[in-house]
Amino acid sequence: MPGRRTEELARLEAALFAATEPLTTAQLARQARLPVHLVRPLLRELNRLYDADRSAFHVRPIAGGWQLVTRRSLAPWLARFCPPRHTLKLSPAAWETLAIIAYRQPIMRADIEAIRGVSCGDVIRQLVEKGLVRIVGHHDSLGRPALYGTTRYFLQVFGLPSIKHLPDPEQARAPAPSPRQHSP
Image 1 (cartoon, rainbow, N blue to C red):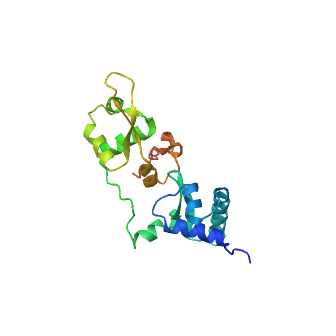
Image 2 (spheres, one colour):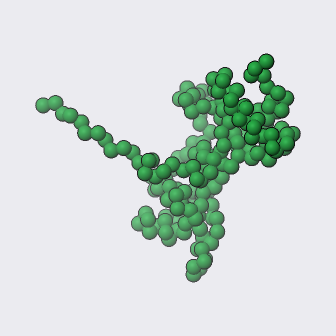
């Protein structure tokens, strides 16, 4: 019968449903007791079935793994019943600093401060405490200053498969307001 799930597909779907965070292909294989080489084709099949059924769900690559998520189009409707899992409250300075780190990583604090024009040690510390930023290494210059980068949690919060999927900064800018015609 078309659209019928196999035992393997059902186990994969159950593993995705039970997961609280994205699972890698290997983790999914282990959880669903499947050979690793079957996971990606089964994920494609699962998404095909979800699309054919116009399901509220689909499987997305997020933070180096796979996660069962609801479709974006349902977000406003779902917000009435349950708050979003990731409520990210950041100051404008923290948003700016996070954007600099995300797009320029790995980056030293001195370089962030040169871009922003202000000291940002406290802001970086807050981003580290929130789990969005981490020390990814040390620069070879005098004092071996820390290099900052984003975390897997950052990718999860923003629903990105990897840092390569950040939006193009030029496309992310708000469009200029169109000139309005004033009536006399």
